[in-house]
Image 1 (cartoon, rainbow, N blue to C red):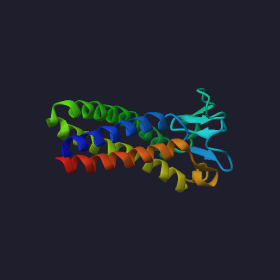
Image 2 (image 1 turned 120 degrees about the horizontal axis):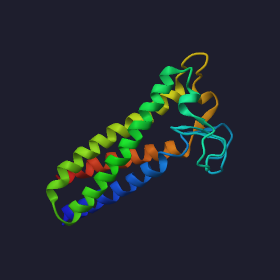
Image 3 (image 1 turned 30 degrees about the vertical axis):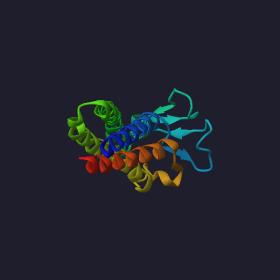
Image 4 (image 1 turned 120 degrees about the vertical axis):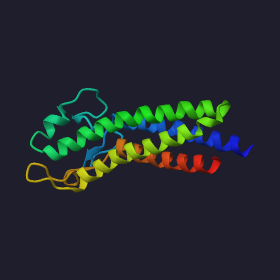
Length: 175
């Protein structure tokens, strides 16, 4: 019985973590100082700059924004790739966790591996955003904290990562 409760808890944690990654990835990582996180104000996402954050059109792509900042451009490219990988990994972990709930208890090791992988990939994504926020990369690339605050997307990614770590603890407990 405790195994069933643990597996149900894991499946729920993974479902919410997957939703948070899915929603948090395309939206704002950073908002200009003094703007609301919930209004359609300018924002900076993993893929570029938008004048209206709730719009789907980008005013400037990340490669154009960081054309003179090779380190920051590379950071954003790596974060983009790892964010997409994280969505896939978290989705697979949820699907397999749901299957594990009804049968195939042996999938717990696959789920544990996926959670560790997801924790690593998403951890790198938000760590790269923290580095961009606090690190000055030269004259053309001031630290983002001078003009921006963390956005809702960043908060959702860190929350998803936290749920993933809790999922790992739950899996280790029921294994």
